Length: 405
Image (cartoon, rainbow, N blue to C red):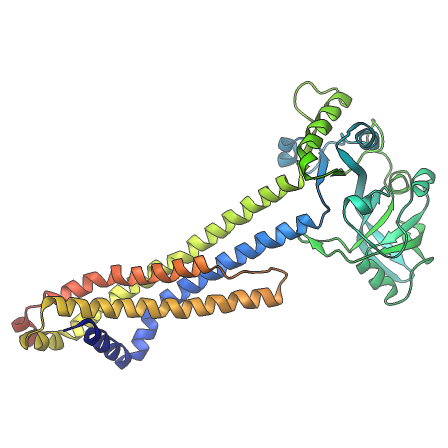
């Protein structure tokens, strides 16, 4: 019997038991769909993180208080960075363009009878260019505002919409922790960054934030949440990191462990990429277990099929079918089940990825490599798990098979 005839008979046998064949394929379908969807969503998460970090600004470095070890051990970070550190970096590090000091806290913001709990960011005029923000209307904080502790505020787009709708908020008064602030501008929408809405924030002079809202809590000066720094170009990022580290060590008189952390945009992105890549691999591995379960299901059903078709096997052997003919037919049936399940699972997985891309911020991509691997593995599983029942069918003695029938 040739391969075409064996395939035709295998298809006829499987279509004669549609419900059983469909249930047998279910494990393969779920496994393929899960693997493809998880890999696609994981790649989308990595792409989204990359785009969000790029939106922070070109060639950005961040200086945060506390060493990496201290940041991993506690949420109550030491207050080791002060405004004078930011000024020293701006004047003494030759490989940078601008420095933006930043101090922030979550505070109640009120306009008339409307109120919200938003991020209040005390910063300097350089914040716009360093962090790649733009003004939608009005102006941002000026050096004069910082020097005079002026009670002025620039609103994030979401806060402006929540309080004023489509009206122009410039010149209006809002209250932050009971103090009145004049609205001088509205920032253009920036979107979320790692789950934090950057548009749900208000920006005030850093000196006003420290002296009139939060107070100074460091004995060394006006303490900061972090410092954002833009390097002159991509090639000077590592030089800037080295120079900033050395300058702060000298200023803080450090001889042992640093009390600050300098990270580049690329460093943070690599960390996030490692985390999302590991999660993607873990989810794909868990989903792949469904493929194994599906293979076991195929073997189980094929073994039952051998028992049910004892008479058919005996008759075919009695009229001249060889062991190889029987073996090939049952292997073909197993491969058809797994391959068909793989194709259906692929279609479902790709559809799931497209739905995720349509209804979430994730730009989930369809990985042709993942599709090829998933379909190839599912076909291989069918071949592997189909061998045992196929060999059992091929070894049946025709006389015994006919007698038992």
